[in-house]
Image 1 (cartoon, rainbow, N blue to C red):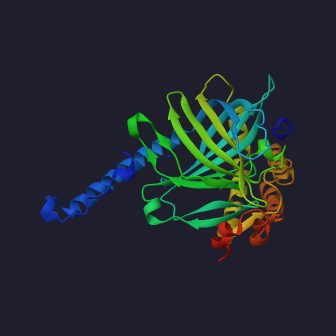
Image 2 (image 1 turned 180 degrees about the vertical axis):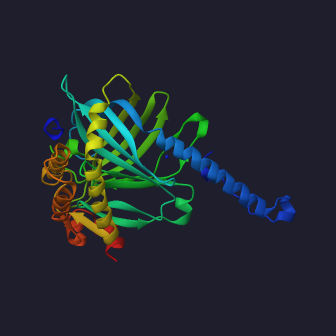
Image 3 (image 1 turned 135 degrees about the vertical axis):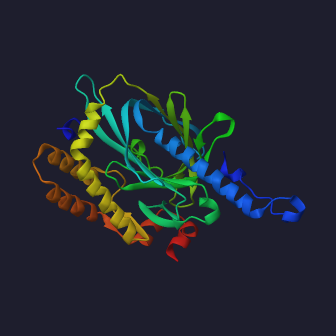
Length: 345
């Protein structure tokens, strides 16, 4: 059925560590005030994340801006768009999960399960991409996670893509979340059409706007074989403008009919993540061999052609057939040994 149509700035909360007799302040009172400010910002942060949910007209605009390798010619911009429904599928206070579902097509519109973003407050560790279609857990230092949120992005099949940590900031009326650069896998728009680079080194920024929000990306396309170098730079601007003029039921009906299946798929990936300090997927990114069977199973479950538990049993089998913990061998083909050293210790 469906398948066939298929981040007050906390860094500013710095204590002046001077004796109380010199400043006239009470350290205990200062600590309490800081805690109150952190809690107040926590609620503001939650509201910012929850504002990413809704019904949107979306546009995806990716433009290579600078060629940085000899002989490289900038590629044509890649533009696309449609409508997207973003729903809160989990909210535990310090953890919020948002599922994106595209609505595409002409008169006969259909849903496409899209990416997912999970937000965790003050995470102790995050799952980071290390190249070679492999991931490892990285501990987040206490001073880095204090008052911060991690965002972990998952792809269509609920496999991980990338993660980063930052504080939401509210300067000059601008609500934004901007982490440091992190590696991430090739986007589907390039992965399916080219093989001349191996990873993105990206700044991944989310900003609330009067009309909705925007996802800005500053991407460096990395060549990791031989002497690592940047092939080109790219700017990405994904705009989410609130729109009530399209039939959201195309997406919401799909989700209500398949959410139990996808909850089971998420649970299997969570199990894999919990059992491995590092792991890899043996195929390249969002390939049909992984996500197509899962989309078909979701569709079959929605149609009543298969019960939930048999569908999840088959889904688990598909997922685990592409998982390996032989990360060193896989990632070392691409990532420089000096950058992988900490992962191999």
